[in-house]
Length: 136
Ligand code: NI
Image (cartoon, rainbow, N blue to C red):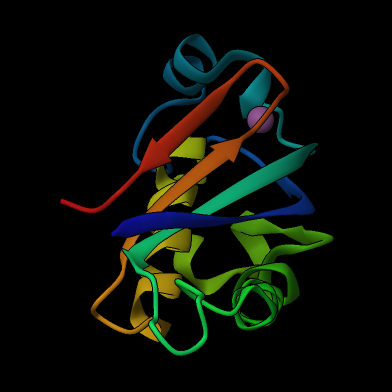
């Protein structure tokens, strides 16, 4: 029996959507308010779904305390109250759209999880706008 165990998490972060190789006009036309040179913040909500077999001894798919600590160490500590463009190395040359952020988060968590698990990450940038990634 494969079951999905999930954990919710949260971080606040600032970003600016901008391509250095585009003109200011092109950046503004494509990214609009998100191109604001003074940055702007979001309250990001994260859903992390881990799917695997129920362990016959513990009855767990994954110990949610371990998943909680993993998200805290790998994601919250790295992203919370940060300027993603300036302070998070992964976005030095990568536009911090929700799409790119969810892939970065997935890669960071996947690298620390046992390969037996399937991982899906959902990232809400606003209560109504969200993206998801499950690899591939
Ligand atoms: Ni934004």
